[in-house]
Image (cartoon, rainbow, N blue to C red):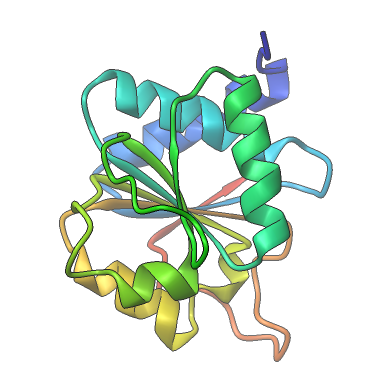
Length: 164
């Protein structure tokens, strides 16, 4: 069984605190290798245990594969929303390709919690379209680099920043 390390537990608590302060869109920054996928898996599993839907958005097939493997190793039942995957929306946790999710917005159940991997991409139109489609959902972005390549920040998407 995968367990959180103490610094990961602390970061998860800080994220929960931000949501508890009525921040609907939180960005969490942690360096490469800090175990962001394990942390979001832990949060996704806890959210699903409360009967709430989670959508974990990634932008590349290799990230879908890695995330799906980690979630499986953590015992988190999940579906995959990607071009060549069967449509199985029954699982409360879904790992989705941003491109495929954007095309299927009208057919999939609305998530209560959206987690955005590589959140520095969240200012792009496709990502914004997904966030806008689910205005009631809490949104967590995770990244090692909290700025776009051009140097722009992420303040137009996220309300709060947690540093790991």
